[in-house]
Image 1 (tube, helix red, strand yellow):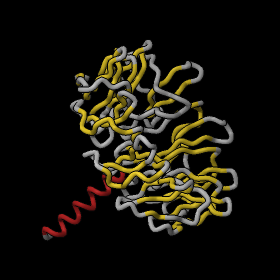
Image 2: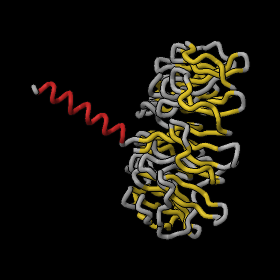
Image 3: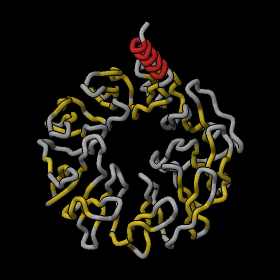
Length: 348
């Protein structure tokens, strides 16, 4: 066997092993139990629908569930086996199902006896629960509050002083975190240094190197990591950029559209404007929902009652009152049979 054939064979084997080591799953609520479980892309329930509340699997193969009888949160794996934790009892940042992050950098934000700390994927408190508030990790850093003081921490629990005295700090994104001080917003880096002055009325998160920001007269545009305007402030509202399409949803003169990094506006014949996700955005025509691309072309014709954003190449969709999963051609990967479903997540 020559060298080229050997390399090709090795690449094929490695690819096959990688695919086998990855699992795509989603949360599913059945009509029969009216509770949540987890299903695969064959539509099979791999974890019974027995939970009042459950949350997406992290890439490390753990998910949070809530046991209503015990009134307690637990971590489970794909075999529905509960992770033994120390301490056994903890709470999560569960605000009506929002803002509950998964494991990032092998750490998960938990509340123990009224204080916040971080549990690792072995069920141990890797960073003690000594803080009054905490954010999810992103890029190796999080922010925590001790009394009225906000500091940064790394994955080892080392504290980093913030140069200014912020009243609020958002989660990191692409190495920068928004801070609020004296009623204005700017950005700090992972060293706690103020790298973009707090001159803005409000700001978003950096995505694809850009973040939205509002001027004192409430005009929204997009800045780069030097704080310079890339898309001039002329909008009433806006969302984060999608790295795949290079577009962000914006509102001008009371109407929604999309803008690229050059400030060019894309309009689409749609009754509803979704954010781009993995290169596609949902829209509505004639009361039905589909998806269009960055050219404004409908690649999945409006045919569903409702949809969720694409994640890992798939999106939840509802038809005739039942939810299933579609791929990027609009074909059913999982036929609609569930009362409700959430996003498809990748477990490595």
